[in-house]
Length: 141
Image 1 (cartoon, rainbow, N blue to C red):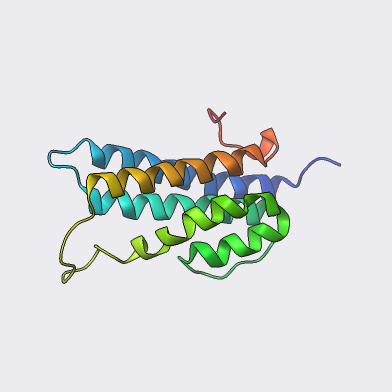
Image 2 (image 1 turned 120 degrees about the vertical axis):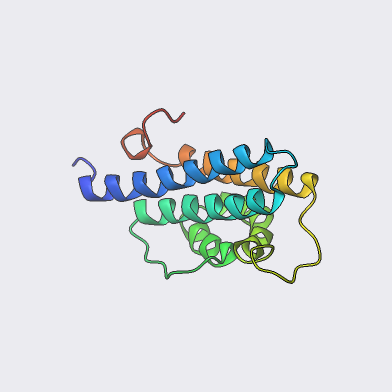
């Protein structure tokens, strides 16, 4: 039986948004000076959306949350081999709000921003590797 077209569409939509966040984060690094607060935000968003894509594909419900650890724990019930990646990605949850509002003493460093974006790329690629070709966005590998 072929995969449900609605499930394919939903999964692709999450992945398209995650890919957009990866692009936005990378672009923010090219600004002078780099918009590191924006890079970390988009890294968090890309992780969140990629994990939600995996859950959508497996028809696992999830609530509206920016908590990568929470989403990751549900993903681990699908694929326990994601443990190390979920552990590495969980700290990115705070980037959904940290640095986005006045009051934070400083922006993240370039190294911190680049590290967050690298983890987000790893999560995105790991999710892609666990999905069949029809569920992947066009142009993805």
